[in-house]
Length: 263
Image 1 (cartoon, rainbow, N blue to C red):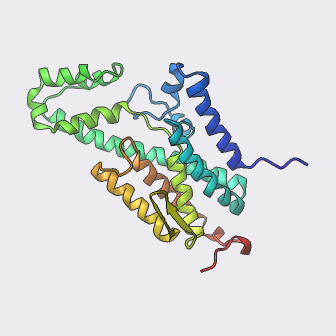
Image 2: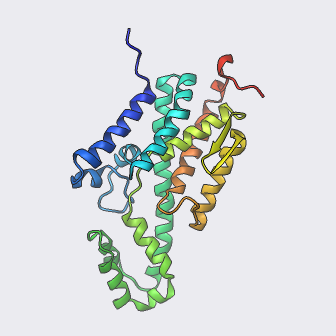
Image 3: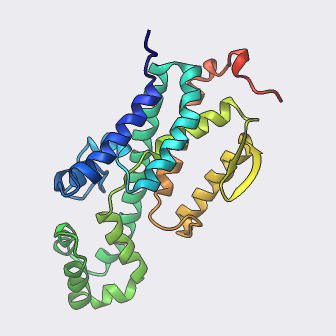
């Protein structure tokens, strides 16, 4: 009798399939890159379904492999503990929740900068230029030529951040993976984990809070040891939603003896 395909295996296959479709089968298809990633809520490309589709969309091979490694390593064990149905619910709730929190943080940051510009006389029609293609020059030219006082009053870095926030979509299963990591840490606090650049085994109850604090630091300061283009608040959002779900499911935190780690 053939072995049943697990939910984790299905998720791995779907992620891999979407990646192959986007980068090898239909690499020039504009609709895939327009409709699958999660865009900023005010962007014309934003659609509600992107909270789901973005979870299965990745930027490059490295991005895909890291996330799938996390899904396979930790998701497989959670599925054994909970069963496929509960694990699938958990995966989608934390993944969608990560996108919602990330979008909310981005909206708050965008509105904070936009309010400063509006206070210095920049009208709505200038912000409408953000939807004109992928060229930042019309927006930048309108600001600098017509509203130099606003540009002088608001830090240039903030204006760049406003543009990038509005135009750059987020992709990847990282938010869901961070939710899975959080659940793993609560279920197996004494399991030893290690990073590639820090190959010293550390208990999950210390390791996972440490990487969450690192994400929080990077999200607030903009400084990241892993480089730019990382959605730190999506990671934190997934971890937060995962933690809430684990509280809701706290009566189910007990593990069968064969899955318990010794203290």
